[in-house]
Amino acid sequence: MCSQNRLSIYYTTEMEISRATGVLLILAFTAVAHSARWEANLGWCTAGSKFFLGDFNGDGKTDFLCHRPSDGYKWIAFANSNSQFTGTSWQKAMGWCYHAGAELHIGDFNCDGRSDMLCHDTNNGYKWVALANSNGDFSGGTSWKAPLGWCYHGGAELHIGDFNGDRGDDMLCHDRNTGYKWIWYASSSGSFI
Image (cartoon, rainbow, N blue to C red; front, side, top):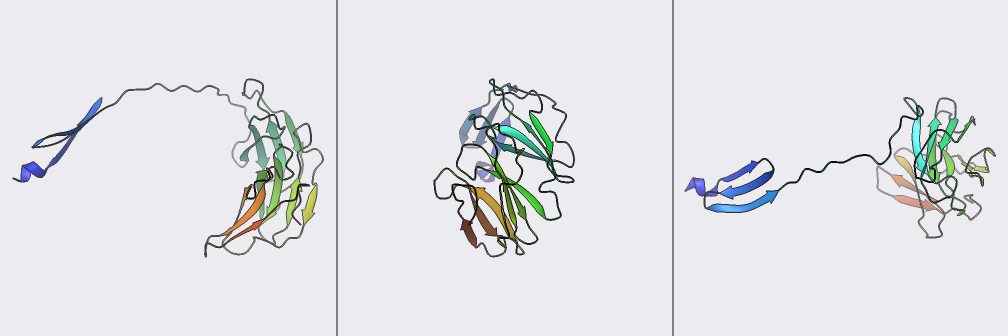
């Protein structure tokens, strides 16, 4: 009687699940070959750097941004017309968002269709925004800054998203300890006031 309740599973290219009283289920597997549509070693954004995604030039394609926290250097690789990347399109020693406690975030804060950068100081809640220009780079530096004193308490995590549906990204503060949430909406100018 015990053998009737035993579940046996056998598999190779198909899996048979059966009991002594009969077959319950047969699943067939097909091998699928996957290949990358694009790949390359761009030779940048390696150890010690942080990799971000965003549409910095507003062309509807996701671009790459590399941030080196040790000195604030930034690189951008724009997706080309084939949605591929051939190397660095822009780079600058911005000296931006690299101090102790600095945390870089990406979002479209001024609703212009281009991804911008927000620097959040986890020590005091200060915020800086650098808006992407029409070329999709940040040669203008900081566009807005304020000592908001927001989302820097123990357990605080800053997140970016469009919470009011205006096509501009806002800030959400999540408290990991309590689960409490706060949202600060961005103005259409890309500031938080």
